[in-house]
Length: 219
Image 1 (cartoon, rainbow, N blue to C red):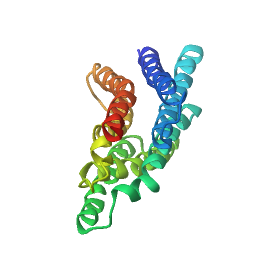
Image 2 (tube, rainbow, N blue to C red):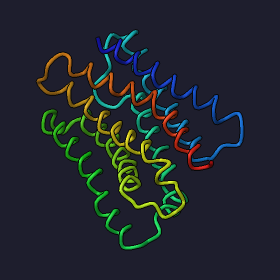
Image 3 (cartoon, one colour):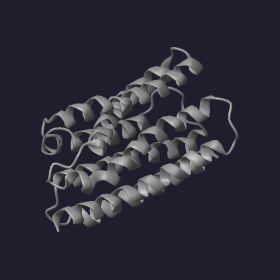
Image 4 (cartoon, one colour):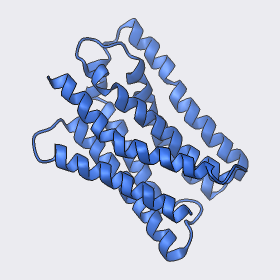
């Protein structure tokens, strides 16, 4: 079953990635959008590795594997896109921005809690160490996703343009850890399927949703 779920995730990420290549890499588009497309591409490669490993070996090895670099890479791209110039554009340093910065800490704290639950089940070993590294990058990206969700628009229009994208990306971060969580705790057999279906929907929707938002911003 897990091989088919991994294949579904590979196809979904591939659809999102190649759509992004077709829409944004043929012309002069914002670097922000291109970095997110590349993030989806990393997710595709990570899922492809897992699928091939299931196909060849019949299982995905516990602990660190090359496929995890795809997940880490995807959130590193998401983080890099929102960090720096993008963040300084939407964050004017006002008192409301300070409040948003504090509230946004709830995102990395939630990622830490999810990782701790996995740690409580598995204990201190290669699985939890590798997942902890992955969770670190999820937490960094999630902080800016939540921050840009709750910031008030300063007149640039970027907050409104990226609102739904940031919401979906934040949800995707939770799903990535939930994917591991439902594998390591006692749960109904359909739980991994539900998580996978939700991940597939998000991976397919991220780029079109972002494209629609950026069109509203530039017109």
